[in-house]
Image 1 (tube, one colour):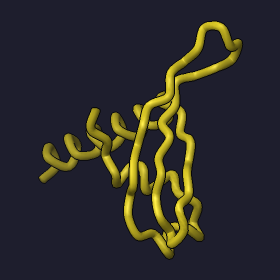
Image 2 (cartoon, rainbow, N blue to C red):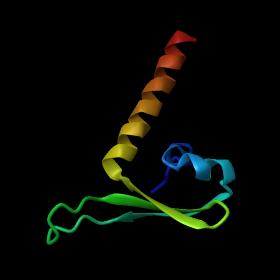
Image 3 (cartoon, rainbow, N blue to C red):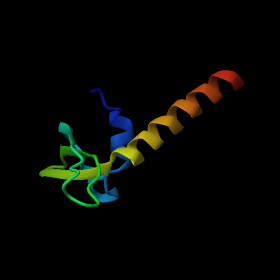
Image 4 (cartoon, one colour):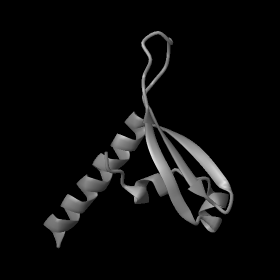
Length: 79
């Protein structure tokens, strides 16, 4: 699965954005039916300058992707 790293960057804490170096890895964690309330998430590992992780809901990520695609299409229409 390919990820939009610009969108992932939006989820970083402001302090880490100032010192961001590189993305190490992004994985999708499963939703477990045996665990009530579990959801499918993205776990993104990055360096800023030390290794850090953020956990992002798949739903939130997909909303941002749709919003970005919608904005690109609107720009194409208007320009």
